[in-house]
Length: 80
Picture 1 (tube, one colour):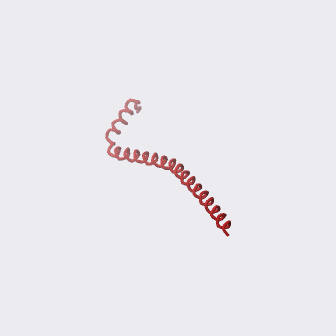
Picture 2: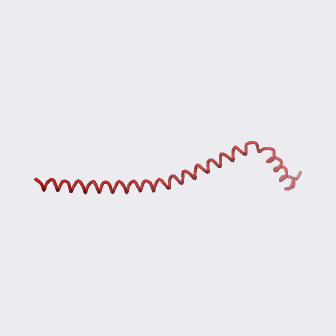
Picture 3: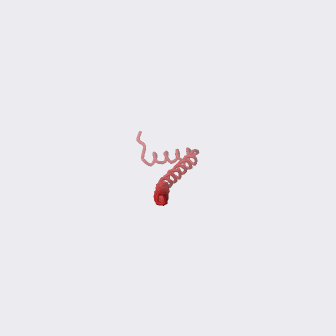
């Protein structure tokens, strides 16, 4: 008994037409997962830039604080 490719293809199409009840849910889950991955990638990329900005601000504040502390110490020792 030999089945032609056309017969097999038609049987597959009939099966796929009948069994598509959960397809919508699976598609929504895949789309949601894709959106979550894209959002995670964007957040990861942006977080590096935000961290760099905070590091720069911290470095500037520490340098400014060190400069003001050392100049205040020089002024106090000169007044004695």
